[in-house]
Length: 121
Image (cartoon, helix red, strand yellow):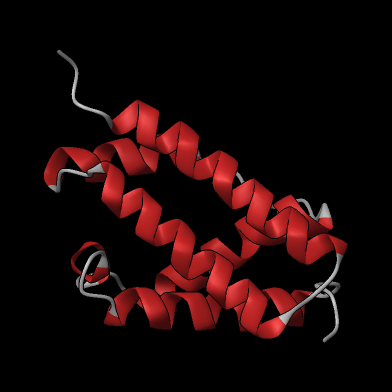
C-alpha cells in the first residue's frame, strides 16, 4: 500500500471515513444532518493542512465541536469510536509515515476535544 502523499489521497480517506461515520451506530447521529457536499471540502482542507502542510484552512476546530457538543452531548465512547473509525479508514487505504502521522494527529485531536467537551462539574 502507498502512503498519503497527495490531495487525492486525502479526499479518498475523508470520503471513506465519513461514509463509515454516517453508517455507524455509535456516532452516526452526530453526522445525520450534516450537509456532506458542503462539509467535506472543509474537512479535506483541514487534513491537507495537517498532513500535507497546505495552507487555506482557517476554521477553529475546537469551537466547531464545542458548539456541536452543546446541542448533542459527547461522551468518551464517541471519541473512542471516532478514532477507531479513522484508524481503520487510514489502515484500509494507506501505509507509511504519513499514514502513521494521520493516526497520531487524530489521536491528539480526539484527546483534546474529549477534554474540552467533557461536562464541567
